[in-house]
Amino acid sequence: MVEKLNDLYTNEWNDYFNFFIPSMKLVEKYRKGSKIIKKHDKPKTPYQRIIESEYIDDETKMTLSEYVKKLNPFQLQKQMFEKIKTIIQIANEQ
Image (cartoon, rainbow, N blue to C red):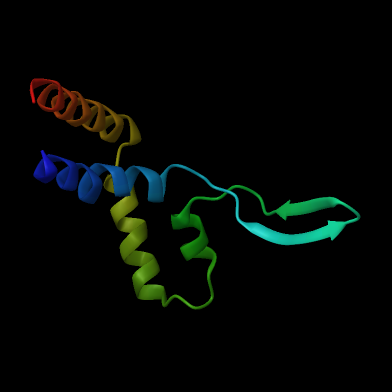
């Protein structure tokens, strides 16, 4: 079962969440009286953050851009659900 979980996380899960699921980053956090105020940036995927970064070389950005063109989020999601279903079946049998 551990091998199946590792396979899921290293393949479909990473690609799906790094290229297609946006997240917000905490930009600022301060206290105003007894209240804590948090400011977040606009939601972006980790892939978008890398592409916008000035610290990443152009070759890496091009490689990632070519890689993302080959990905299909719906196919990744379908593969993830199939693997999760298999993992749940194995867990229920134990």
